[in-house]
Amino acid sequence: MSDLRRMPNLSALRAFEAAARHQNFSRAAEELHLTHGAISHQVRGLEQELGLALFERKGRQVRVTEEGARFAATLARALGEIASAAEALRQRGQNLRLTVSSVPSFAARWLAPRLGQFIERHPEIEVVLQASSHLQDLAREGIDVGIRWGRGRYPGLMAERLMGDVYYPVVSPHYRGGQLPVSPEELAQATLLRSNEPWLPWFRAAGLDLPEPSGGVMFEDLSMLIRSAVDGDGVALVRHVVARQEIAAGQLRRLFGISVPSPDDYYFVTPPGAAAKPQVRAFREWLDAELAAFGAADLT
Image (cartoon, rainbow, N blue to C red; front, side, top):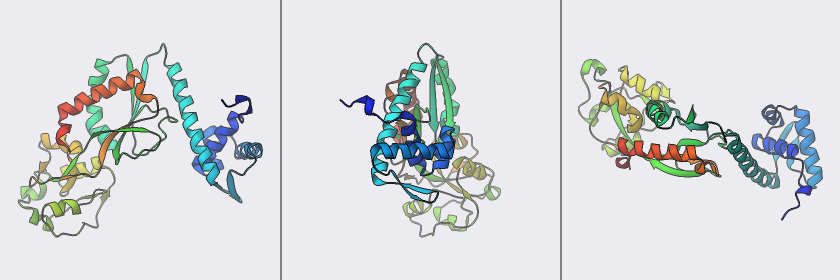
């Protein structure tokens, strides 16, 4: 067992880990509410204690060394476990707190409208819902659950696939005065709305030899894309999960009956140890039931 008396100063370790993560002493100072000079002093002291350089320095520019990067990764895991353990102690004797970070389109269009049911079932749990597409350090940010859209590669985190999704084109029933495309070939003369999701896979599935649309607005957020389609601005390629409510309400009409599976999936992501929290277990059980009722099994 290691001699804890020989462990470097915890403040110096925190300063180094933040500086390595940001590759910048000033940003580390902002995060830890210290000065640039204090971060630099603590890192140099740690380097002297360890007997090797942890950063390569060129003026005010710094870059973590290979040994430093490995050490910083170890520190990040250890500090994350400490933060999780401290949070668990804070919650004893208090209402349970559940912080969920979800990609914005899923949070706004699928999760938020259903959360009231979870709160009614679990009044002892206080839910904080954050909308974010960034891959935060969930443990350091105090986030219990992340719902992410991607390929499931989230180093240092536990990730379980929730469901897939499919893409298909939709249009407002009022687009061009109700003169809607009746065959995929007619999309060559339609206004195609653009997002980060390419049209080409759907074109191939429909047997079309069309180029990827260019020009016009590029919608980064699917909610804005759907809003533009509802307003009759053009034909949008959407994910079923986030567009279903407008289709059910008659605000959008699905075209042609051809869909393509997305290469990405929705994932349930937790920091180490968070999955065992009672509020996280309760949320996962409720979420699984909601997904089953939604028909997620059909979204391969």
